Image (cartoon, rainbow, N blue to C red; front, side):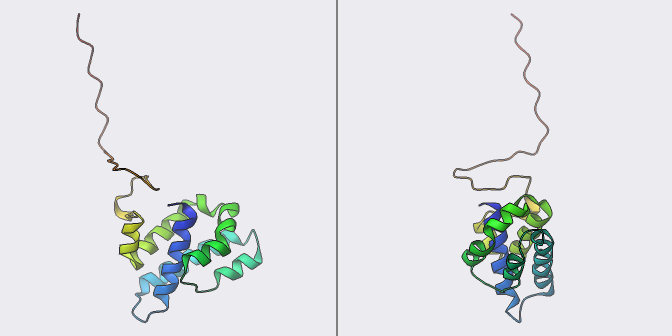
Length: 135
């Protein structure tokens, strides 16, 4: 999943959760925090884009259509603080969607994206090579 898709999915999930009375304060704070980070980043591009960020849209496709290019041009897609906030919001507001998008904030070791085959990551120290046999 691209960074644009992660950010727009988080915005949609946050907007949807914010409309429910049952949403926790942590989710609402995470959503507001993500929007604040994006507003600061997007303020350097276009006021119309920042206004689009004010909408509480629950469809990630709409968010992507409105903000996708601006997220890329502004560098938001490369901002680890923004991406981290988006991932945390997704994990908190919709754990099932986060799992479907392969987002697990607690065990992320820098491997983010789409993997089309089983992938195993080992976080152990490297094993030294075997010395050549005497011959």
